[in-house]
Length: 259
Image (cartoon, rainbow, N blue to C red; front, side, top):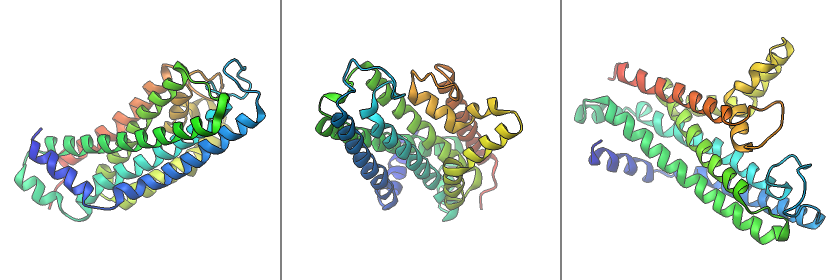
């Protein structure tokens, strides 16, 4: 991978405002959610480090805001990936790029790498802010330990996967707006609708294999919910969806006519 390509791609991202604008919503929502849930759990006073798991979360009720923050940062990382990958096609800047660098593989690889780096920045900032709110408002109700570290790690992995899924959609459609709208539609209502349809026709077992459900199963780690895939199946399914979209976008970009 050429250094010039990497520098150019980072400049494209950081000279536009959308990269930091997309961070605002998950950061603010994550902080408020973490503070509120932690304060509620601390006020109840029944969820200490030795409490049972009746709250349904392996890391305790106080950390519910962290999960909420991860739901949002995953979505906005995906939106960033879609916009970043599709913008070159919308503004025809992909043409001069490929004239200077005729081999398309390094171009696509660089774009995906930059997408991953920005997504990592998103999730690390949001997780750090959420943890700070948990520490300040949670008192003794926070279950600090390996399980919480596992949630943080899987949250990072899920965010990177969805950023690449979004980038794959951007490359497949060649449109940042279309890819972002499709991703948001699926994430917010599309998957729920498909899951309900599958349940209605007696194929509810297939719903857990959808990307959103696989993401929940990945981050939940120790969930005993029958409606979620367990480890290590859940992260493997999420990786498969990531490879399908990112790989499909890469494959199509190699073969698409660029004018």
